[in-house]
Image (tube, rainbow, N blue to C red; front, side, top):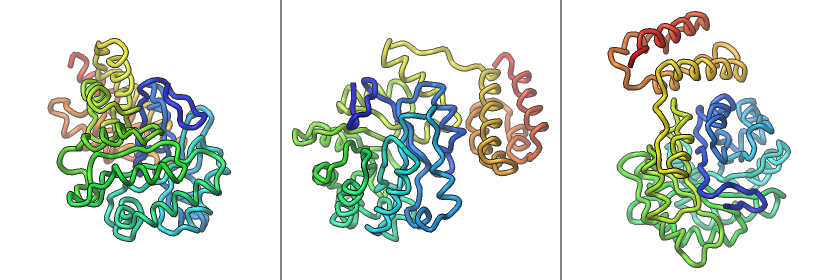
Length: 327
């Protein structure tokens, strides 16, 4: 069993990474059906939250069915992060997670997200301040360092632990790598195997298969694995990995008809959460991934990701199920 403060997770827990415009309540619902152990909101701007920005406020919407769930915040001003954490706490999440890992230019280059890796003293001050001013567990997500010459995560993780955080997630790339190249789990393993580290250490980056997940646990000894991009249009990856970890066996691949059923449910939930047409717009990136790999799919895919008519989309999905009945 893995514990984040008083939150109990099963052994070798699987976490859904917070992803902007992805991990909204509709997608979290889909992942929950397949056994994800811990989820997070999309990341939320501390400035947006304290200014009551509607986009930020909406991201605080969580339900008891999603627990345990964390709300993730980012920012670079101590006072703003403290105030935002208090607002987030009122939404009653199980965890407040601090994002020191987002590599997107407009965030990192103004000193927030992975930009914090260029100002470790400020990162530690923000973390310590949030820990002291909130009553629920605080965790951190970050990267190996700013660039290849500054992979200082072993030292930084120790210092973050000393601020009072209850767990850390490490993405196996530097900020300068963005999402290019291959995630380096070696340093994640060094953090986990550092005898000073007493909190759970979760690894993140390039986990795309049950075998990859098993390898990460066996080679690097992490307490859990966070999965991001590989979940898009594939929420069942959590069930695939759990089955393999528990039994060493693979579940049967989903049929196209099963994927159609899931896509329709996801569309329904997306519209419930965001209304029309926003709920349809948000589904377009998922549709492409749900049916990735189908032969001669280009024309159908184009129709699927351009229509704003719910009935037409559902008819297209039904047609896909029939057309690829034996694929």
